[in-house]
Each structure stands twice: as C-alpha cells, then as structure tokens.
Length: 267
Image (cartoon, rainbow, N blue to C red; front, side):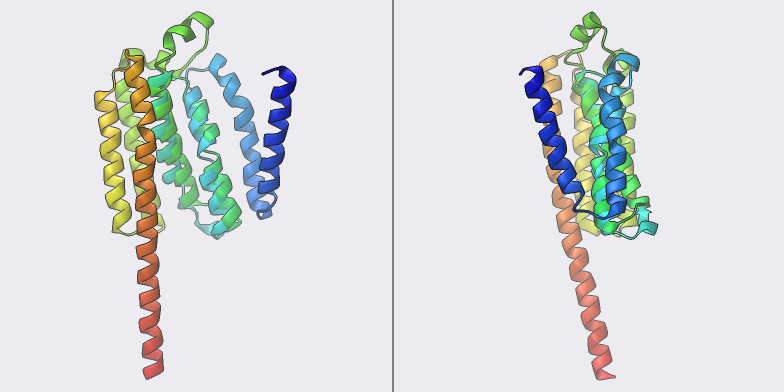
C-alpha cells in the first residue's frame, strides 16, 4: 500500500466513523471525539513506554462509555466502569504475551465502550466507566500475550512493550489484569442489576482467562498466538451471558409490571 492509498483509506474510515457518530446525541459525540487523543497516542507509545498495551485497552473499549452515554441517564454512567476496566485488563494480558506493548492499545481500542454508552444514554455513569476499565484490563491481558510473539524483533528495532517490560515476570501481571477484568465485569453486572445467566457466563470467562494465564508459554510464539486467538471464544461466552441475562431481566420486569396491573384492575 502506498502512502497516498493509506491516507485515502484513513480518510474514508474517519469519514464513515464521523457519520455514525453524528447520529448520536451530543454528549456521545463529545465522548467519542475524546477517543481521538488515545488513537493518536497509541502508535507513539510503543517508542516511549513499556505500557502501550494499556493505551490499546483503553482505546478499544471506549465504546462501552459511548454506548452508555447514548442509552442511559448521565447519573448512571459510573456503573459501566467495572466492565470497562475488566476488558482493558483482559487486553493487557493477551497482548502482553504477544508483544508487551499493551497499555496504549488497551486505552485506545476500548474507547468505543464509552462512545457507545454515551450515544445511547446521552451521558456517562459508573456502569460504562466500570465496563471501560474492565475492557482495558482485558486488552492489556490479550495484547501482552500477543506482544510476546514479537519481542525478539522489538528489541532489534528499539520498540518497547509490556512483554519486554515484564519479561519472565509476565504471568503475575497477566493474573492481575485478568483478576481486575473479571472484577470489573462483575461490578458492572451488579450496577446494572444483571441476572444469574450473566454471572454464570462471567464464571466461564474467568475460567478461560485462568486457563490462558496458567498454560501460555511466553517463549513459544505459536502458543502465544493460540492463546491470543482463543479470546474470541471468551468474548462469545460473555456475550451469550449478557444476552441471556438481559432477556431474563426483561422477562422479570414485564412479569412484575403485569402483576401490578392486575392488582390495579382488581382494586
């Protein structure tokens, strides 16, 4: 790809993103626009910090906050923070194993969490913030795993990463990221009053992360790639839990409303 082609592609992607963003409320637009700082910082972070995966996680999961801002009242924005944190920690774990440049990636990739929330709610509360921070931790996890594949080449070209920063002590860090990610997801579920299917899926998610951290061989690029790719299944498990839990919560709410209406009719 030539420089001109790259610029044209970037322009098209930015224009498309802006078109989607402008369909949301102005609070969501502001939250989404704020993510551009992380988008610009992430590529530079690899040369100036050992924590680019953290920035990646923060950026990737920003959509949690955007969605919350679009859908929920502003005074409830804090409820999404645990979920955001957990996803960021997860990103840190798997990308640290890959190349250890995760912090920046986490911050950048998870920015959509904030954008999505703000787009739906018109504000930000604890739930989207918690979700964003959870997502950031997830990003740190999986991108650290991912970073371990390139650590030899990174040393040669002078690129930094969490993989290089943690070295042989990577697994304790991955364990911390995973724990924080699960805690954030659990807190998010509590804040939004999720039902039991969500927590069953969360337990499965925790088991999957534990498997990744315990079995990954950070000195085997093939195994790092295998563990990195496995995160798609973790996401599928969690998504299924969110859908099932939300459906059950809606059913309970509708049933409760019906009972109240029947009582009023009898009265």
